[in-house]
Length: 296
Image 1: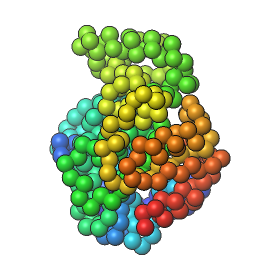
Image 2 (image 1 turned 90 degrees about the vertical axis):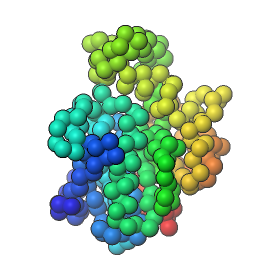
Image 3 (image 1 turned 120 degrees about the horizontal axis):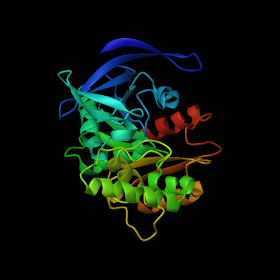
Image 4 (image 1 turned 60 degrees about the horizontal axis):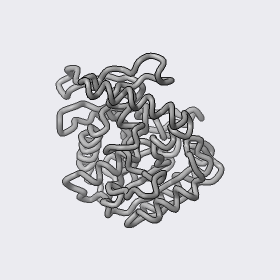
């Protein structure tokens, strides 16, 4: 681990270490380790769509104490467009929000969890924000080992499909999905959508994954009362769900989404953080306290 000092926007310095994570498939991911090298408990954190190792630092670092560490890292979906390298330093593939393949999160998270296990932490919690919540649940439902994984933390877990239909309209979203599917059928799954079709770039497979309302990524299906969330129902570990009371990306009141999670979680707790938007800005201490209390 290389030593570093992280400075937040509020000019508060946090000591951390720069780490390199090698995934089972031999991809190299960069991360930051906050807290003791040999903690009693550790949190592995997965950032959201187009996020990065620095996302959510404002509340994650407030969880730290002498026995708790936090690992944040750049998964291969970080930023808008990014390059992902192999462990030997060679170029591996294009990633980022535009080109990421959702199911690759299994390899990314598995690498981060294995890295964290080497710290000998007795209790490990895996969590994520926004789209990172989908990745957290998907990984937990598919991994071969949940050894010493004590629970999952889902921060602002929303359906990307429902959010986009709410913000962009059903007809526009359906039209773009139709074009993206056509490209996939023609073997052009990594080709960008035609310019002007959408307000930001995506390759065809990524757009279908995010906004078709189908596939492995569509885990939080609260928008469809007839659909059973099979992936979520596979989770037997305790889950903490944190919802923002005034989430600007949500298509419905937080209370309705909370009720959906309470119905389908096999074990866990659902909390609405009042008066805040998707980023939890202004409630960082409150969010950190909730996570701390739940872990203990």
